[in-house]
Image 1 (cartoon, rainbow, N blue to C red):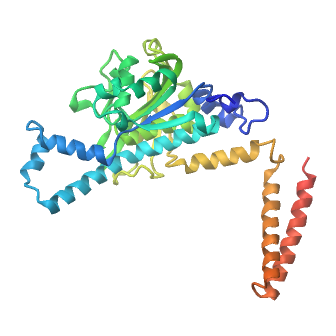
Image 2: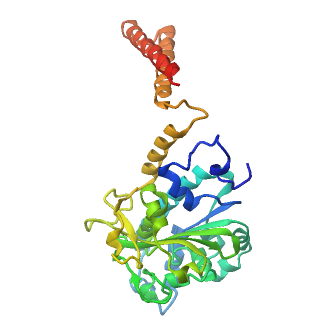
Image 3: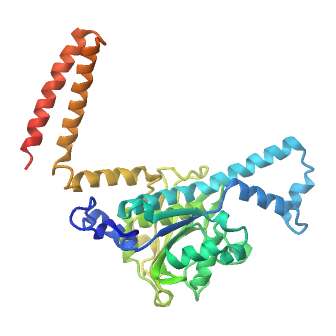
Length: 385
């Protein structure tokens, strides 16, 4: 199989029947990429957070940094500040990690493992100019499909790619509005979160897009970006959950945005029904498409539950596989599972009997019951057409 060739094109013996209703939309969004796929994920990490604190404290014009300097921190206070900032950084990155898990779980269903690569963009440089001029970054973008996670504030690769693709208008550059997302290049309409991390972020906004790779028109670029990581998670969920992927595909694309090479774009609103501390894995999180072109407003789009980790995705995938695999399992795989478990039980009880482990008055009746179950499971299995 050629590197990057999606399983959907291999033939009749592939494991996932992507033409089923559950996965057709996801395959339409993520399928048919050729060559390597690079996931360039958020650069938020402890080193970056601490580096920014040091930089701010050395800048006489930086208000936050000078407030820290004015505290006259002793060693114990420094430790406390470092721990607080580290917690903030970890908290911010959690939604980005969940978004990455969602996307990787889908990609690994469609492509061979050696076609999928990941890179923390902090390794490319700490300034936009460094990332843009990095030879490795240029090679990745010019030869591969790229997926960027997190907006330009947390991921400098997003900043470079959006600018080159003519999409930098999505995120306002001024500091007061940088945690907001614009919905049209010619309008100043903004989607903005309510509250702030890490304490009380009750709503967030994100955007998912698929467009041509600005470094190579024969490759694709994807982006899942939020005002905060909460929004990044919601944007990824739109494209990775089959409940909402079909909606994303049906969202209209403005002609001027389509002229920029954008195939699909949808904005996400993500919120919690209460004002608790931000928890990106909270099952109470809801998300839905927000689209400026729809005459009825975003209320037209369905509200979806948060697939708070890859657990729900994997449960759906497992169910899908168990009903779709035809080359290894029979049409009714549950019977094979019953047979396999019964066989394991019989072999384990035989071993216990031979080794003299356990009371024979308990082990032998269990062995008889397990053997009976094994015979019945084998009979059912052989009866499957």
